[in-house]
Length: 344
Ligand SMILES: NC(=O)c1ccc[n+]([C@@H]2O[C@H](COP(=O)([O-])OP(=O)(O)OC[C@H]3O[C@@H](n4cnc5c(N)ncnc54)[C@H](O)[C@@H]3O)[C@@H](O)[C@H]2O)c1
Ligand SMILES: [Zn+2]
Ligand SMILES: [Zn+2]
Image 1: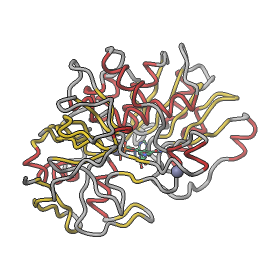
Image 2: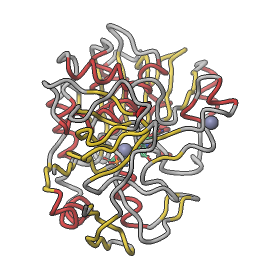
Image 3: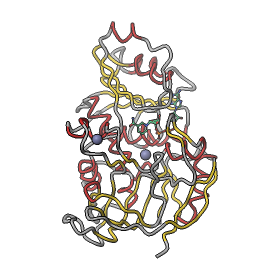
Image 4: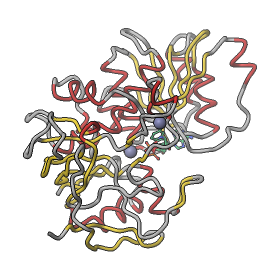
């Protein structure tokens, strides 16, 4: 059976081809993919061919935010059947190392994560995946909402880590997909005032539409504006979802004494000028997160139960057949694209 697949064959070059039809091992399922979100990391690999030490070896398949329909079920799988609507956790850890056994499976050094070299992603018609990392989604949830469970899980992990609670004030730097899902998560956890900073107006408009107070950091000093609007108090939790010195600095500058900073952005390897005296004299706590663990069920329930409208972050929808155009648009029209998804 043909399995149409899009391969990245060079920087900014994607070609259509065919992969082998996957087989379901005893503990696996084969999934007929229905929706794939285009992530910032996919765009980074597409434009640069690498993220840090992860270097693409061509041909390479992009895409890791996915949902679909179970097509075939391995003989030992009991919780899924053919025809089930599902979304998949893209990282499969070893489940043998200390991190895995202590519950921090997102920190497993041997994790196999879709579209992270050397492992291919899912811009195919059919893929196989361990059933243990494949989750049923209810009928009222769209496949695109299922695909967006992946980034939402990051937003939930960021807010959990920061301890975002009812009535709190939160700052989020960066209004890309990750900043916006963190905004949705913070709202769902009960934050009542959320400042979001970015330099792109389209993204700030989206953040405002989702209930945030937008701040264009190219035009005004984020921390000064937050301090002014909070009567000099600052925010309970500041979350960096951009990864630049300027945005981490803004987090430090707008957090209240004894406040919390959460680093999500992975942009720069080193942050210059980290203001340690500002941090120490106000006893700020700085935490960081990497992906997520055990959060797919929570994210699915939050979307299905109407607590989080994750589909609201989507600005551009493309057909699977138009995958090549989708990547070109998402990189060239960065001022207008907030979040692109490929619907099959
Ligand atoms: N920790 C994790 O597990 C994890 C997971 C996924 C993504 N990330 C990282 O999170 C970050 C965000 O991911 P994304 O997919 O939303 O990327 P993105 O590039 O779509 O979003 C980043 C946003 O930051 C904005 N920005 C740039 N400079 C700014 C400034 N000076 N002030 C305010 N905003 C500024 C950009 O305009 C952009 O909208 C990236 O660094 C990514 O690598 C981390
Ligand atoms: Zn992603
Ligand atoms: Zn492990």
